[in-house]
Length: 186
Image (cartoon, rainbow, N blue to C red; front, side):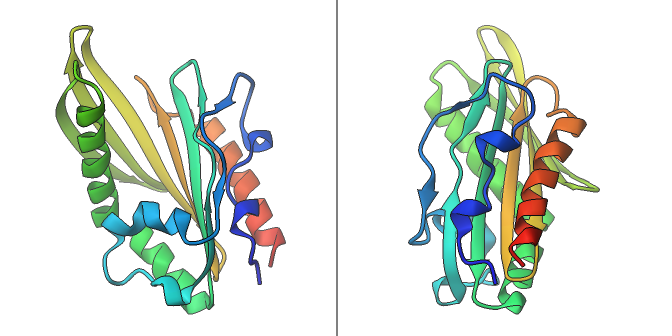
């Protein structure tokens, strides 16, 4: 059983290419990673009694407009982990998260007016597209959500890029690295 959620989130060594900067510290334990999800997961997501550990990676960014972030949760049982993964793969979760991020973007930037948010299911997860208007024109932001799970543990990966989507090969690279580490802990 994997119990150290901090070892499951993306690390700098998992990122493709060069030029990445960590904007904040790794947050681990005490349900911190779970707290970031709670507004959109609903009552079917396992609660704190079924959660052993959680962690959030730093927000890794690079000047090209890319961002990689991960949240991991380790559960007491494989049933709880499977239930959580099912919730995070739902369109309702992606839409809720998209709406929350869009509200945050609108509140954080005085010169940006949120215009639209939509999501589309993909074979690997969900892509959420945000569009905002500013003095510089219309700005699209693409956010990809990928869930990697192994029974009693999961990692929600977030990949953002603007104006184009996060490159498929780079998303796969990070996902495969996290998945290998997750499966190695079995």
